[in-house]
Length: 177
Image 1: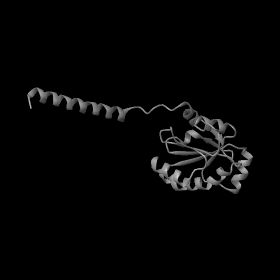
Image 2: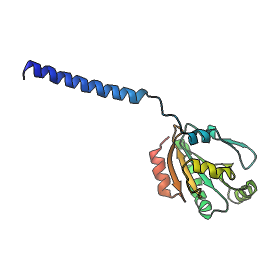
Image 3: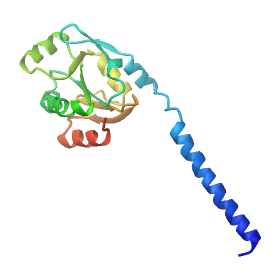
Image 4: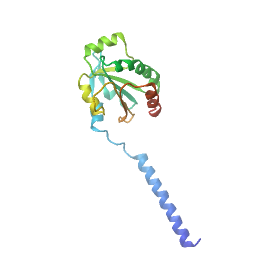
């Protein structure tokens, strides 16, 4: 190999290595992307809980969070609540949080929860919950609607309709705390 060719080859390898190093450095030290408008509004939300307590969504930030929009008058919503209760119990030690946002009358939710106590927190979102779910990607406004937020506070998963054990297992695996 001629000295000129060796010089060019060495230079090309050095430039390639510098490029990879710059790319890695930019990825490693880059600021996280800003939250979208809907995500920012979500994290600023506050709701009344079934016992009059304040449910502040900001308290859930920094951990994987499953948010389920539901109502007492929605049969698939009611059917999936025991599954969500089990997910809450099983994944709490892994850092997961579960929050139910009831798109319903507070009195109906309180009566319902006397019959089926939920282990996870519930916020009374009322009709405003429909608007919030639409802003988070539920274009039809249908129930149930589930959103998974990553530790970074961004929407990571969405599901319109009843969740399945497979959905929950996949989300738990993809978004380990």
